[in-house]
Image (cartoon, rainbow over all chains, first blue to last red; front, side, top):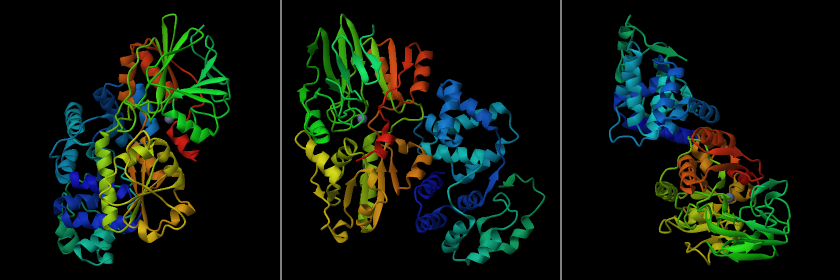
Amino acid sequence: MRRFAALIETLDGTNKTTKKVAALTQYFKEAPKVDALWAVALLSHRRPSRPVTTTLMRTWAAELTKLPEWLFEESYHIVGDLAETIALLVQKEGTASPPSLKDCIEEIIALKPKTEEEKKRYILHQWKTLSHLERFVFNKILTGGFRIGVSQKLMTRALSKAVRVDETILAHRLMGQWSPQTTTFDQLLLHPILKIKFLSPIPFFWHTL
Amino acid sequence: MPLLEFTSKGIYCKQADVYLDPWRGVDKALISHGHSDHARWGSKRYITHHTNVPILQHRLGKVVVTGKKYKETFRINGVQFSFHPAGHVPGSSQIRAEYKGEVWVFTGDYKTQLDGISTPYEPVHCHTFITESTFGLPVFRWEDPTKIHQQINQWWAANQAEQTCSLLMGYSLGKVQRLLKHLDPSIGKIYTHGATEQMTEVLRPFIDFPKTELITPATSKKVLEGNLVLAPPAVMGSAWMKKLGRVSTGYASGWMAFRGARRRRAVDRAFVLSDHADWEGLLSAIKATGCENVITTHGYTELFAQYLNEHGWNARTQKTQYASETEEILSAE
Ligand SMILES: [Zn+2]
């Protein structure tokens, strides 16, 4: 989570394509493969379906920050982005060891069938223990819609540099329906023959944007 | 009749016949600080803190200006006035006015964080507090500035390693000197744009700064490699900037707190560093004054006043012609 959040910050902070590709390549090389696979999924617009409504998130955030709801709403209106508004308003420093990207997303997926009270407890706990940047990324995963100026093509180029597989071959392997829950980094990108077997009737928690 | 009232020329004390930071020329003006939206041209006499005297002379040319010390009291037709540290930029003052036991304080601009160059903000007891509220929204909460200065030096060192020039931009009065004060001169040389150099020169008698060198047409791209250039934000994308060669651009402002604002600025690095109080700073300042009445003058005035009204103060907004930081940037010299 920390590494991925840092990646998002770097991607967000530059307009230069070369810097974006370099940051992505480095991430794909250095991150644990299970996390890197989730990163590929998120950056190719495959996200877990939303476990809570944004209305609930707004209510909980106002409650946690002890702000009147009107002021929370005005702040949201001015910032223009819910994930960022909550990240800014919840003033917590974060802990030394945030969950890994894989664990975090799997927890979010597991949240879907739970009760509202359980969802609230989990989300508030994350808000209180993540750093500003991690909280922003967590909220973005929760609400979907990661727009950080990285096209599928750009990501594929970086991935190609990291795993040394031709870009067009990789682009093909990334097409279609796949989920990090049913495949691995190696199976998807390096030994794709196995991928077909995993397109099984396992309940699918993914939306393609 | 209120001790201070808002007129078409600015904040007016009728009893003393003086204006506070007027936006039109008047006979006698008390000035909170040297920023161009507070210290305007055209008045016959100016009274301000000592440090602001050379700043006003630099900005306004030949003006009649008297300097006062912090907390030094002076009377004008029975009204007692004094300047108190506002912590916004060097010389910045809150203006206190007292008449027949009633006390009003006008903040000008202020911040409660320490910046290493301005006399730290001091709360002043009053009945009515006229406050700025540039960042009067709870989404604005500043980080420890020492962390930001560390980030800036790290950014510079990383550029230095790539032989790239670091162009660090900030408002000419206050911000740029605050940046300069905390730069690590062991990384490289510090160059300046003309506007930056001049204002820094004005402040050198009061504050100890690292050495700087003015960029001239004779300055080559080669000597700038790996070094740092301080300049006002208006140079972004200009012909002047293109002459610097390969640069990494950095910009320090409170407005950089939002992702959208960072993107619109399109700089390589944005540093969230403000000379205005953040949400907590504003609230703690208001509490410390012990005031009953609050008048918010610029920034998120309506929302901030509404919040204060819900929390036990008698608050209202007042339209003024003071700019918030963004507008200062657009009109940066
Ligand atoms: Zn100012």
